[in-house]
Length: 35
Length: 494
Image (tube, rainbow over all chains, first blue to last red; front, side):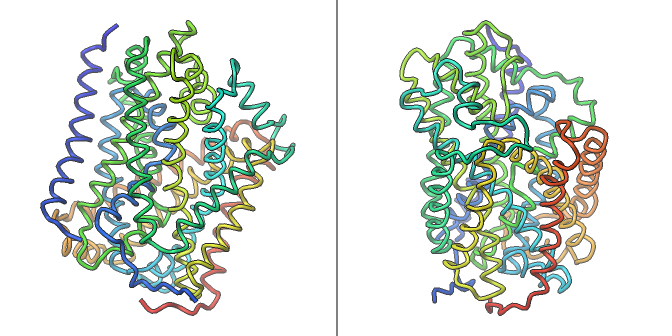
């Protein structure tokens, strides 16, 4: 069995928003270099 | 005397973020989110979940960080600074997580025992029988309390001692502990997910988790479930984020930290869905049953379904069992001590009692309060108290917090404060969310929960049990908040 296209789409959507978002804000934090 | 003033600060921004993430990420991420997601449209649930995260979770996180950072005080004193008559709200906010901790620690004690039982897969072929009868010694009803379960009691003692040791020296020690206890369970969860995904049937499980049913998005209950999930998962309205933010440096960022903590929490929940559903899929295929017939959420998942699946693993079953319960234990410990920190900080701030003494008093009281949940009838009481504290206590506090800060106080002052130190600037949309959107959603959540509980009393229990386990703790805490406000304090200058 393989995942349906819609399930794969939700997997990509969730990953991009959550982990992509996290990576973006972490990058901003590292760049700011605040205490 | 070891009186620590609010000159106390986090060692670094990393320590604060780790502590806040550790507090938000807990057992609920593993046993609640995947189940709620599956029940509410599978992958389609991600849409309302993310909307709720960005319109309620993150804005409230910014609000709580701002209050803590601006007042540099524990919640009771923070609300007192906002308005003298509001101190009781702060006490209410810190007493609710104390009750939460009393039974949360019991679940951790179960995990502790199961971590040891994993060595010889003690639950055998019938994990349900082992958990309910042999381990919990469950009684026939909540009215029958039964015996104190010694293994649980010993686990409780060990965890409360750990909580005391972590907290009594202040936030510097918390910062050191979370540097270990936050990454470790995440790494273990990734290992378990990789193992789960390589098992036969895993894809069927993941398919249940992610296949979207977009028609469910028209159901208002799905949206309410998303808001409730976000609200409970982020550890809001428990005074924790206010307390933790009060230890931030003057020029620390607020908004970006709120985004990082919230997304890390939500990301862990999303990951946990793969851990849970891959193994549940494997179990369903191995036993030739449908996934819906297996316990996917709550204690059933953790102590019945998961151990059964572990026993069926082709190799290194004990190893993966230990990894799973160690992950839960380390996820839980950060949440557990974060629930105790606000009340100890509140006591310390108001009565000049040293942090060590305040922590000692609170942990001792917590241990005795936990004992009721370590009895044969403990599981019933745990579920009853949790149901009412989560659905009414926390939601009511969140609502009151938004109303007081949004309407009785100039909310733009808090926005200005957050913008002054943050890299990401928030606009007037934030005021609107705090003043209108979040209170509206919380009002509906409260009303729906109230109506549901009146029409169908929780689990069909008699009214006296619901009153004792649900209504009495909430009213007692409410009244205690006023008593604590009225008792004259010797406040620490901050």
